[in-house]
Length: 526
Image (cartoon, rainbow, N blue to C red; front, side, top):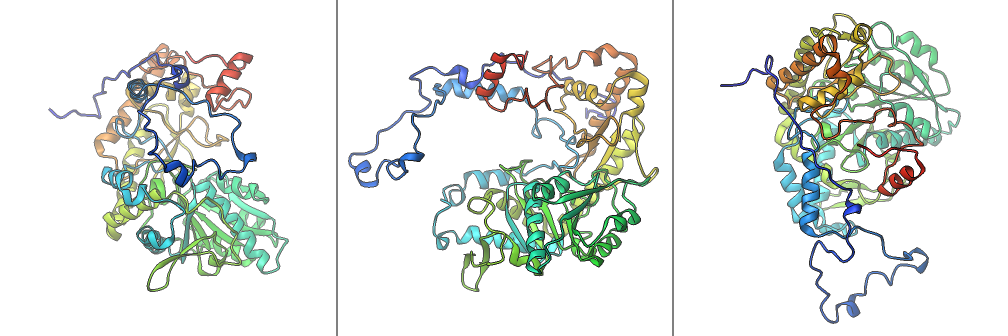
């Protein structure tokens, strides 16, 4: 009989392995593969790969890599995969603002196993990679159509990197006109943090506008901040609250009146793609995340691609090389004297561009629009169900709908039980949810959690998610010890949550961890 996920909770308990770190498994002399010596004469003919490296750049000794047998390596990583959760084993509705949709497996097979892609060397002559260059160009043409822009660059490793490129293009444009005094960028508090962080990193002074009762800054507040020093406005719309600014064209026009450019952070485009475009709103440059929005799993500076799009008058400033077509062949154009230069090795993450190409081609124009409609429908349903849970509040624009996501608040729950969003985070793991997204800091909305149900999620997925949150909220009121001691069914019960932002305790490598433990700066994870 089909399970009713609106009333039944799935029983779950995650595997726990007392597994060492891979470096601790190292045994001198062990090998994961059989090493075959090169054929006689090969080294003499092609060299050993080291002689051409300048002596000053060579390692003084071989890297200290773990030496582990193949069965033990397999066992190690299989055990670790049993201790983690992800899209393939649990509804991944949690990552609000990040568009965590399902990436079709056919794309993974073609991207990961296609020798015409994985065996290509980035230094090959462009005449031998015509297929890849064609995919780049045709993907650019498709996202041009979706956005209304005239040109795109796919080099950035993520949305924030594309945002930095955008800030650099803004500066190059103004300087090309002899305008060197524009040193301010205006953004909003519920735009993505990169809309402030990237321009600040590029050297701009950032002015942040706060929301009114409807969750967006007033037009008067924007006009008061605009001046002859404004280089651009950098905004997300709909913002991370899921609220769309219906007067966005007026905001853009006001910025243009003082000579500023308008940058549209469209990482939240999943609810409006195929329905409304940046061009018609008057924006000059935008970025998409080709990963997430147009397939590929979540990732930044790795398996990600921040696609920077611009209007025709800004194309000369885009990074190099540009993929162009002369009617006969595709080629890489480096002859761009106004370009901000090269921003990433080679051409960025090719495999993400290929996945985006495949996804858009499979969906077609109507499919892209339908995905947006379904994601908004899912969010309306989820918002209605969650708003009925005791302890939940939705700030701003009372009674009005959100688009593709919503920023909720456990503020009433905190006031009535003492439990807040971090307590909920730890408890939902016991029901098989990997986590949920709270929000960017600072927490303007108190005790926040931000959910984005993309078109990938079914009604059963949404019902199961709501049932879990409803049950955890009930426990906060009626069985507080369950919450206080959570998680119970996870591989790690004593979770450390207060040290994640302590720079004196963060360890991003195994060797750093050992040093921190030795100094007593971080206790060992239980």
